[in-house]
Amino acid sequence: MRRGQLTGALGRVLLCVGTVILLFVAYQLWGTSLAESHSQSVLRTELDHELGRADRGTGTTTPGTTPGGDAPAPTTAQPAEGRPVGLLQIPKIGVDKVIVEGTATTDLRQGPGHYGIAGQGPVTPLPGQAGNVGIAGHRTTYGGPFYNLNKRVRGAPVVITTTQGVFTYKVTGSQIVSPGDVAVMDATTTPELTLTTCTPRFSASSRLVVHATLASSRLSASAATTTPTTVPSGASPTVSPADGLAGGQGDWVPPLWWGCAVLVAGAVVWFVARRRSTRAVRALVYGAGGVGVLVVLFFFFGAVSPLLPASF
Image 1 (cartoon, rainbow, N blue to C red):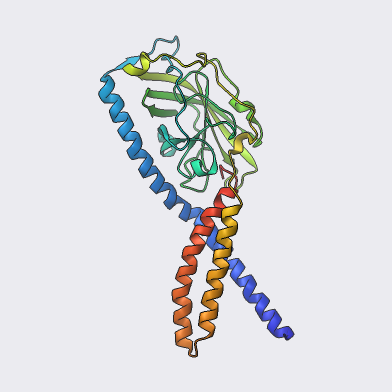
Image 2: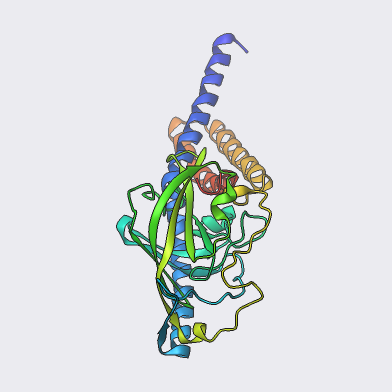
């Protein structure tokens, strides 16, 4: 192969690689939001059903009697991973999202995730219960629920609605820590809420942590009469977190398979087009085949995304 031909081939390869990178950035910023929006719709329907069933079973709410604030909900068993936990609302920064159980990449792709699964970081109580409740969320991808979490929100209300009632927290402050600093999730004797996300935006080098304390609660009648689990009231159950505040990471196998599929699809389109004699037919093959390659790329990007830091 002549030097000019080699240079031309290398240039085309670099152009293709650059295009794929740009498409991946576009997927992260917009494509992931479409996936998150669909997941939120499904979760909201499921949560509305659970809340409606709880309302039909209780009818009234009972205010708490803890001095200085309303009573926390009794401790109960954690829901299964991927199930809706409650509705998170922070009006000051426009957050209105369903919380999902778990902080693995597959969980946070659906919305803010509750730290409640062993092996994915600290295990914390459910919202509204005694102790330090932990919730993580993406900053810039998958809808970016915590995109504006860095804004001055001291004193702002954070409302979480679950089948146990409606719980309003007040933001008390924030800090920036390393991804491995799980001390922010330490057990507390008072009902608290800790929100975590990546910082700065478009980076996973640090974690932004926002703290809040329970200001008021409206317990459902069923929650008020629930017998607590074996976890003592006021305690925050934790485990030794192997992943810190980063949550669980994805598997390398799916991206490898989808990467091979992209290469095969691209090679087939190129081979078929090269065998066509006229420029118009080749352009048609490249156009139609390119759409197919983009579809395969979409699934490839979806497989690669879980390899990124879980709260990115």
